Image 1: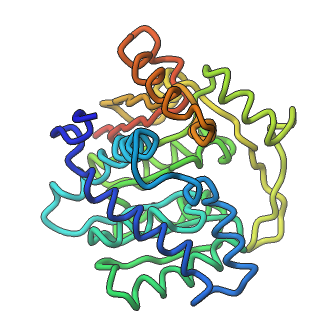
Image 2: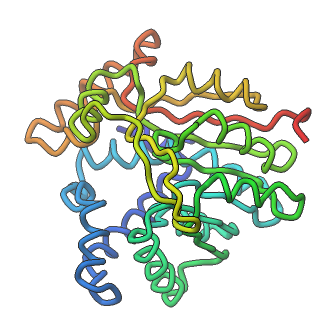
Length: 303
């Protein structure tokens, strides 16, 4: 396990501290949330509540988050001024809180009113405790309207973060093309999601949404029903192809665990971690990883 403390995981302690903040938040959220709001927060992070605070399962979980977040944290570190980040599909704004803690100016966008309502109270709570160093703005808005409004130079972003969001945004191709336009020159996009090629991921998605992938959600501003997808996964190769066709270059794929984290709660969780670590040694198997993160930069030809 010493791998997790190598230079590859230079943000490991930051991730541990942040996850500790979130865990404490789950325990104490009734101090600032209504009971039904606390239920929304705890239900979403029920896996975290059951996660042990030590041991191989915990260590693997922290390392996975570290791999996902390192690209955007490095982007913040190398800038001399705070960066502007779009958190697409921000949900309960957990990652927005971390980015603000690092000094970024964050715009979080989501279609779910109940989650954003909780997110706003979380931001106030973290602000009152002096945790936030940057700003966070939340919008209950269709992400495509957000992108259309950000095409002017003064509203563009340095980075776009889409964690477990691209599987819900439809059409994904249009989102990526618009994302390229609203990024500043050389801007970074980071997409992290489940892998279509992993049979356990497909089984999990099938259990969650059945066979119906495409559905509709009401646009909170116009009231019009807009297209929405339920856990529509892409393979890393498919996502790389989409990015390159949408105005991005320098695509880098980071694969994660083969076995979904939801299975690690079982008594044999540590054995699954060992199996996972063994499988990760074989480069030919990486295309079957359960989840992946892909980063890309805006091509200079995209204005």
